[in-house]
Length: 298
Image (cartoon, rainbow, N blue to C red; front, side, top):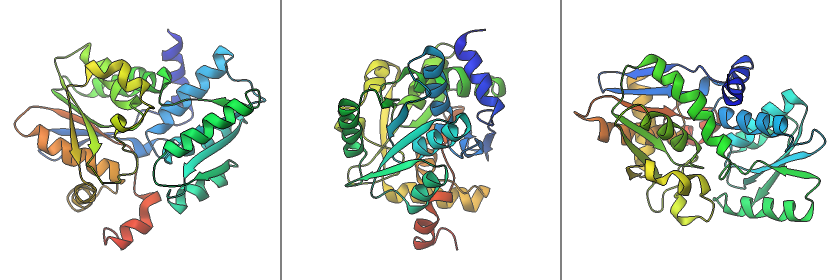
């Protein structure tokens, strides 16, 4: 057994991985319901892989503080896993992050730092400054460049999907750090002749969990494996929330905005094109106030 298979199995022992694969009616679309992970998002997988590998390799010492920039889910996953492993951590998030995210991070004992604006770019810059000033104190996971972020899906999510489906034709995944789409693309391109589509937020739209990597300097994973992604599509913020509404009304699934975006993109791509696989990264919990405001939930 390889070290990476071992890490995947260890993650299962604490409730990360082996999430349900949900068939979305007769659309030909299947989605992994990633909010069944222990800390309620797909980022649990990447966070565990990055932390466990860093500990096993000696890159991370138990007396260091993990510091990472996050739009929310990775930070929550790091905080939760660190609480289990008795590791110190500091999560840097945009000030626009939902209050529920900030409260949840604090509940795990994390130090929470907020940076101006909606984007994680300022958060990343803050982390880089701290690493430069205090290299012995901090350990940075660098999720945008860390191959373990991608490996979590190559060794975990991909094989789980493959166990349930005989064949897939399309893979449709939202782009954030690039970990999920590159890991799954690596895995399935080795097995099938599939089309891989990355989902980006439309110009001027803010969809939590998605970003346009081509407007950022932090895209190492995507640059490394870009040849595996066949095309990109954009989804507007309004369409993402429409996807959330449809999933609730038709299938009683209460998902986050990036899940709505993945669903709408999958609908467009899957029509008469065989079996499509996507992921629903998180649920509605952190977005309740937004959903009430938009009359998605009461």
